[in-house]
Length: 320
Image 1 (cartoon, rainbow, N blue to C red):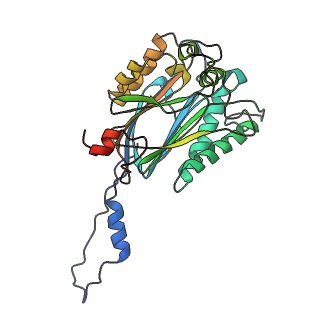
Image 2 (image 1 turned 180 degrees about the horizontal axis):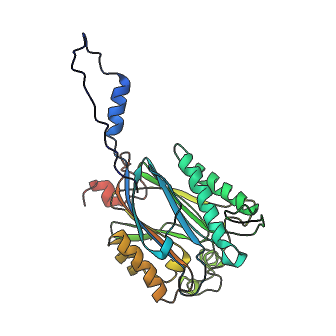
């Protein structure tokens, strides 16, 4: 999506000036800025209705230096894009079908959040939370894109990532998950806000019970549910070679650890198709959506003492 920007060709006069002016500080700053490495990500996204539902209530979008893209994945085909710039953001939302018009809720929330973040000079966690609160207010007021009335009620999950410099800002509400693979280790970076997840955190049930618990899809938090929006947010360090996957529950609920490991080890487009097909093959009856992100380059120099960096990387540096 974001193509390279070439340098403007320079023309030089044939006459010689009496005296050459020394380089200005602005010139030095411009040259230095052009040498700074910017984020480079390879992204593949896929969202399908699934074998049971009639409407796809999942939605996703992103922004980078080239602008905003809210098209999602029309035609249920994998979309592959190269994103880059000082900041890159992505959001995935899963509308709650039981509350009606979940498709409009997810689309509206995605637009509001990404538009707000794309307009921010440096979108950090504060800006992410503020953007989600804007979306929450719109859904509570029934202000839905494509709706002819203002009936409140529609709700949606939301998971937002903003890559900037050498970090990623993560915020989530609901049960749309974010996974990361670093150094061949897959880790879940978000917390589910569901009845089953809350019981698991309180140690009332065990992990194997949570997988089939009747409350595993009953959310305790969602965008558009309450006046006060409770957002889970955190900032993490990012390194070249990191891989991320954002999945709605219709996708991740049918996956095992080895499915994610295999998908992360492939081209993003192949991995995205693998995860969605696997979820459906395992009996998935919901919309299934995934975005796979491979980090090729980060911005500013990394903090070698970052808390989520493996010990061996902190000790030996960036050698594989």
